[in-house]
Image (tube, rainbow, N blue to C red; front, side):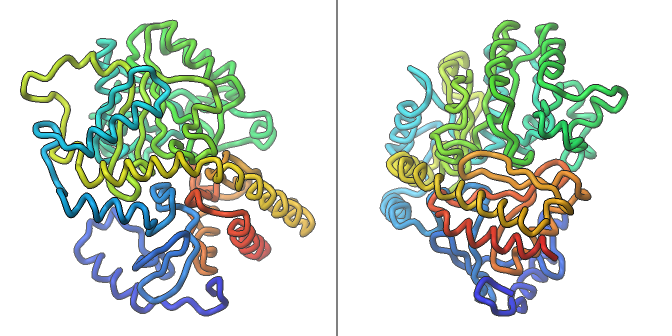
Length: 450
């Protein structure tokens, strides 16, 4: 049933999915009898599929649509720029929209004199950051944390410990990265938390408490071969996991002690997602390089690597060492400038609404306990701001994916996350209200009660 009580129609979506499967690599889109939908149009938080079914979007399409779908301000910016110039020559003959965006990024960044490299996707921006760290330090290895997701280009792919992504490419990736186990919180330790770095702890009885993790990191850094430590200030696709208080500042201290740079991947968490402009604001730590994407483009492909060390590349002599055909795309830059400006303007409003969102989760947990569901399926709330996850620690791998598919039947678009697929993720547009969360959490109670 949909959120309006009607049986979900699928005939037209299935027809289009059948056409898709004939022409797309089979590894790209997962298709089953009930999944996915074929999106047709959207406005605000509501998406309509090819069969006319309506859904509330609690993914913001991987966090991209931070201001909701069909935002009028962004549409005006898109029309105005497209009437003048759609494509330019970003690394040869630049455009004003590129300059304006770069100036805005410099103003809002945590640096005094920031410069940036623009690109299209988060993975590309992470490539820029990894290359920059090599140029600055003269080193060519990296350290990252288990569960992290930084993109699937070959550079960021090396940072991953999930064989779902690395299988078949191991010889290319070997020796480029050291994976550090994610530290457990006390509550995670009490639940067993089998999802976390079984490889590192499989031969010991030690639990990855943060002191143990920092010792492991120091051992890796001591050889002075690591160009940068790469981390998300809050893991997104890793299961909406926050770091223990003070842990990130200790990572920064260790990295700089051994001449290693610190790169924050804020592709998902940046630009208001956690209730602050950057997730790193909650930690009071300024990285050497900041990587942005997703919400940055307002729905168009746009990403950036930002920092004060970009001068290390040297001055162009006519052929850039790191560039692409669509670098500084005028249309994306114009819409991106409008999106970031609007997010900044409305951030106080979004933060106020988070008080109501927290109340929605509070009511959900009270109802969950009153129904005695917590005895059968223990749950834990993770994340911060508009990046929240409900973790089902004692379930089988893929449990959250099953829940997500049932929520789709009820008219809600969600995603599973975490290495085991046991976290139900909520990353809606920042325009989401507490009443929207009331609806999806009520539906979640209905699903779990089954």
